[in-house]
Each structure stands twice: as C-alpha cells, then as structure tokens.
Image 1 (cartoon, helix red, strand yellow):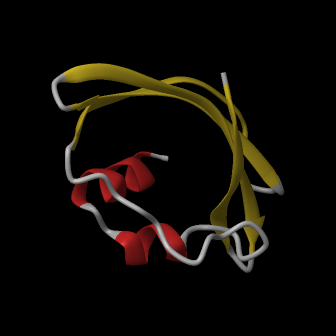
Image 2 (cartoon, one colour):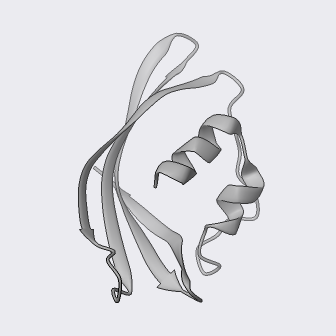
Length: 93
C-alpha cells in the first residue's frame, strides 16, 4: 500500500499498472497535475500474511487540489497471485 501511495505521489504509472491485478487493471492511470499529496495513514490491516491469498488495507490519504483539502478513505483488497501482491480493488468509505 505504501509503495502504491508513493507511486501516486511520484506519478509513476508503470509501477501502479504493474502492481494492479490484470482482472481489474485500467488501461492507464490518470494523474491531476494540480493534485498535491499530503500524507498516508494506514488505519487497519486484515489478513495479508504469509499463506494468505487476500489481504485488506484500510487507509486515509490526504491531498489538495487547487488549495482545497480532500481525503481518500478506502479499504483496498490485495490478492496474492504469481508470487506477489496485486491491488485488486477498493471500497470507498
């Protein structure tokens, strides 16, 4: 989760697409040049240990667009597939 947040901050589309599960991966990631990321807070994790096939991360990411603050609060689902974790999807909270 932290590495994907960092990829959003840096605008690293290749990393984001490479860590997105092929069943749910978009063709591209759109970035807003006015968006400024301010921080990530992991609120909870569930599963995701060795031997698990799924893992969940609840997080809050803060950002500003044109000086106005926003929060992205999500419960992300990751799947262990082909010997690594992939972002599958998320539920906005």
